[in-house]
Amino acid sequence: MRSAEDIIEILKRSFNTPSTKDEKLKVVVLCIIISTTFWFFSALNKSDYVTQINYPIEVVYNDSLYVALSEIPDKLPLEVTGGGWDLMTRSFGFNMEPLIIELENPIRDNYRLSSNLRQDIVPRLDPVTINYLLEDSLIFNIDERVSIDVELVLDSADIKLSPNQRITSEITLQPNMVRISGPKSLLDTIQRPIRISIGDTEFNKSVDQKFSIRDFGSSLISTDITEVSVKFEVTEFMRKEIELPIHPVNFKGKTGSIEPKRVVVSYETLVSEIRNVDSLNLVLTADYSNLKKADGTIPIEITMKPSFILDPKLSQSKVKLKDNE
Image (cartoon, rainbow, N blue to C red; front, side, top):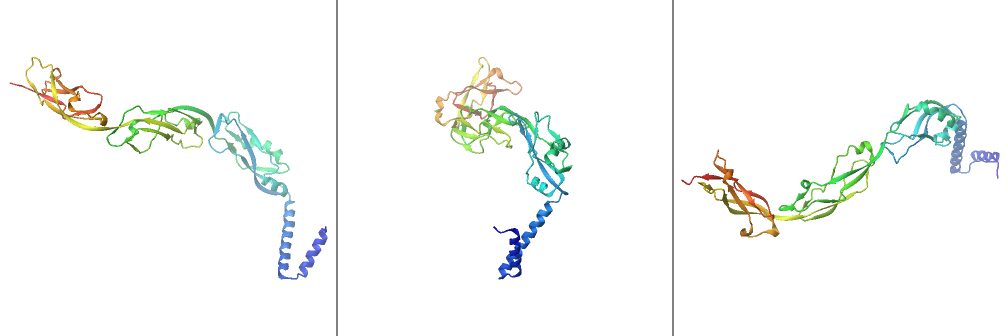
């Protein structure tokens, strides 16, 4: 193996008598590299450099009981003075064991003054010395981790149905509760119960689908379920009209008659329950005991209505008592 003196001598000869233009260029580049290397190592040997470094911090707390609302500081910026070699190694994070900060109750104990950390960092940096702490304090934004059980609901008013369709069963959600976990301060803002959204779809048949639970807008909030099964029956109805008589009640011994004697009733019924007029069993009455003497009118009442008839409406709501004399 050749000595350093031999290598330098060869470089000198190559520089003095290079055989080609490419070799001249190679020699020049090599000389620049060598001189830069000598300068670099010479510069690192100086001991009065001033620079900034970040000292690593590790914050330790019980993350099963607490959760960070924002990023926990993991470094403390310092202005330091030291030798080139020492500063270079520390700038790359070498020879710096993280300073452990333990928080028993991070909600109450939510900060550290940088000045109180200095005495722990100084021996770890030796022989580098600290000039300034570039931040006054370290702030820890940590909250209590909690879980709550919240009811899930779906209001029938939120459901859009195709024309002539109605919900004809109870709306069931399975499950009907969700467990939500996360920072207490965020969970306290959640409105309860939680409403399930099924979008803008118009339903024309019975529903048995899964729908997503809404996003709470934070990655810190989690739920034990992400979907809920929604079931309800949808049935087609038809609106019909029929003219029916009004039956006088408690008119015995009274004079006069009612006008009109018949009114039109519109109603909705299941398409599967459409029946003949005679089988409706829909009875209208005008009770004399309800006579309003001020205007001589009697309200019309529906006193008998089968279960398959919905939303009955009368063409008029009262009759006039007419004197027969």
